[in-house]
Amino acid sequence: MRFPVAATATVCLGFLATVGASGAGAATVGRQPAFDPRPGSAGIGDRLYPTLGNGGYDARHYDLSVRYASSDPASGIDGTVTLKAKATQDLSSFDLDFSGDAVGGVTVDGKPATFSRVGEELVITPARALYRGETFRVTVSHFTARPTVANPDQLLSTVFFITPDGSATSGQPNAMHAVYPSNDHPRDKASFTIEMNVPTGETAVANGVLKSTKSTGDGRTTWTYEQRQPMATELTQLAAGKFTVIDQGDVNGVPVRDVVPTRLVDEYRSRLAVSRSQITWMQKQVRKYPFDLYGSLVVDTELGFALETQTLSLYDTPWWTYPQSVWEPVMTHELAHQWFGDDVAPWEWSDVWLNEGHATWYELLYAADRGMLPGSFDDTMKGLYRDANSERAENGPVAQPLSGDVYDVFNSNVYGGGALVLYALRQKIGTPDFVKLERAWTKKYSGESASTADFIALASKVSGQDLSVFLQDWLYGTTVPPMPGHPDWVAADPGTSITQKSLPDGITQLGRAARR
Image (cartoon, rainbow, N blue to C red; front, side):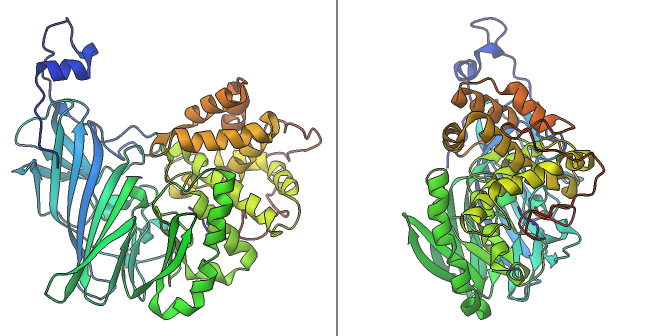
């Protein structure tokens, strides 16, 4: 994310299947392990968000269906979501994350389940306990949620937001469960089928490929999208209203479609077409694009950020009040996230530098290639190095944000500081091995979630060097280490004013008013 100036039937596993799934679970060979159903945990284990996500099961696929009450942008949704999941322990009950308005009912494998709401948790007790390794389906029917007016000074006000043309979503990092029940953590990705029922004449857009539009015969139309590749819930995009879909053609087999308010098509068609060349550029830097299509969604309101919702990056109209040297590299930033953050998701939110550091890295490389930086690429990195100690003193180490406050999670150090870590790594191992690492990272963990420790291990393997101490210092140190190859670079003392004069406004201008 970037702020500006950023039907499988239920299977009840028997003894042999259970032992096969986990031989270590049996105290004695040939003895059936005790069936011990317990509640799944109310959190997945994230340091910054202890109750975000849920334990005891693995999400596999969401069938999400929402109905918009009317064409009024402020109209709420009534929805049903069915989650196919696999139990990772014997379960007496389990949670979904949900902080929306209401829930109508819950079933597990078609049988009514009891449920209660505890804070932002939907606690579900099925009619019978579930065995470890069992696949099950939980359906939450008639959940409701209502959009609000976006306030750029209160970023979580933009989770489900109103525009003059309709509504859209932006749930990063921990708030998509305000819209629909889910296991709302990037560690538990799943594929999606999304149905959106809207008044005929309205356009509905979601992640993935449009599979059908079907009139329901009552003055309404259902749009169905398929997101085949796994997606973190926080990257869900549900946009509905007076929008037009612009077909920008294919780029190396990747269809490109942009979505803009119908009244703004002429203004944005050519601007957004730049993503065609950016896709080619990013594929040369890393590897083939990981999803079935790409595009941009423009909303006519002020959000205070741009966001990499999967396959459809989100921008507000104020981005285009900045010079092209700002908004064009920012588009590369969001595109880069499709590899770094979307396809390869963070294991926990402390790993967000893997998202933002990489996206900033490619943003700046692109800007340098296009002559959009005020100096050289190295000059830009030198400026980041100069302010690195002040950044760490204010925001904590690069890979250890101070708290789960959204401004702490998306602090300036995970952006510029994250890019600086990558620069230091390239200096250490050389450009050929660095490029090899970037490609190996996006291939090895494609469709998965990966951690900082995973990155350090892969960097060491690819380079043939033990980089544990080197990267631990760069990622977790309270002061910045010496820059390889640049012994003359000096980092100012902590507390020194952060100026970033070497950087153009809006690209990596740092501070609390920067970007996600």
